[in-house]
Image (cartoon, rainbow, N blue to C red; front, side, top):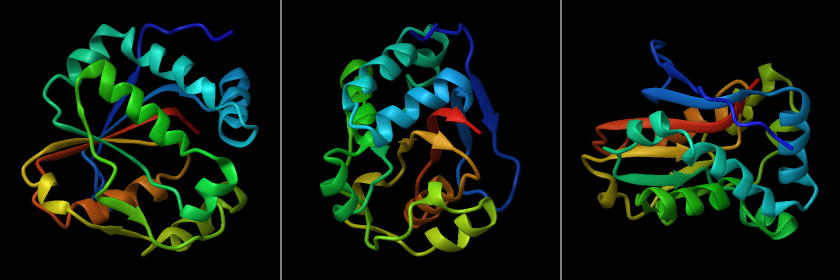
Length: 184
């Protein structure tokens, strides 16, 4: 179905407006990758998380890059969206990666507090305004001085992960790397 590529892309953040240090992604958001992610996210194909995590962990360079990370956090979705979909697509990937890479899964500190219009239904220009102020922190003392891997499915404009990282940066965090399956 999907062919594993030997390389992944590490984007080092050099923009002041971004709150993350690195962004790692494996694919361009097009073709069969796009179709597969859309099935995973919107057509009740939750089992596809295993396909994606297997791509990640079979890449030795990727696994070595993450050896010094402490915590893995999925981008949260609202309670309403979780109830509709039945799962958090980023949460499934983060949970599986935490087990396979021996990273501590933390899914009780970053919360989506507002149910807003889905980012996928908005233009690139509308996304940043739509997502502002919708995340909050609880139990954040466990994040202090940690290197964090934040997991999401798709990086389009980066508004969602950047807003999450902005909230996470309220604590004294050493480093935040964003991991997505694909980048638009």
